[in-house]
Image 1 (tube, one colour):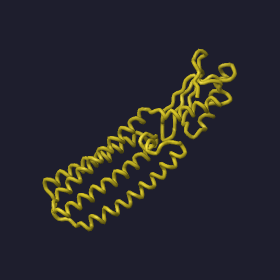
Image 2 (tube, helix red, strand yellow):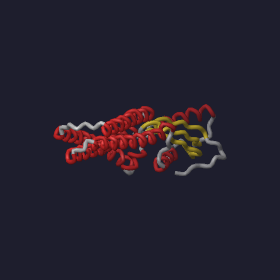
Image 3 (cartoon, rainbow, N blue to C red):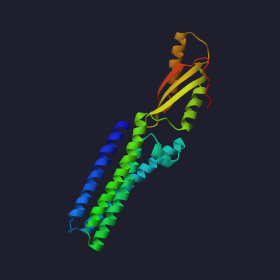
Image 4 (tube, rainbow, N blue to C red):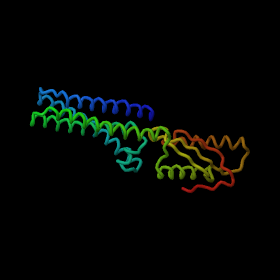
Length: 234
């Protein structure tokens, strides 16, 4: 998901930004004088309604997920693990801002008769798309190479490990996102009883399966902790 989100951010937004800027520059040097302003306003208004509806739906999803995770909505959109939701929110906001710029450029063209305003508007929209592309690429790159969850999520996972009846202590814990709300968990734990290696291996695998029952844990890999390793506290 993070690879294709990175690819989409580069392809859709970067290519869109380049095309918009090139079109704007062409308009500056060879402006088109003729324009049906009413049709232009109608097209922009319909597009604004459609993009606004999409933004409302995506923000509703953001509110649902942040309420469940107890996170700030803005922080979740910028730094959350749901790359698809982030791309939709960014695209909808950028589209509405771009439509406002296009409407302003069209109005200035109509009021002044200077067709160059259309080119300036197109260039500004291209710059906007480029900024969105850079933000999305930077965010998705972090998750693609491996990003750890917030400290609150780490404490919650550690607490769940420590309350498991078969675990007496946790010596190390590594978490990283492998998908939207899905974590890879690697931990060194000490089991409650001292048992033979074969028995301990079976119990360790069972504990890992128990941990994977939690909705946010995609993969749990547990190893035995060394006796001299310090214990982690939730």
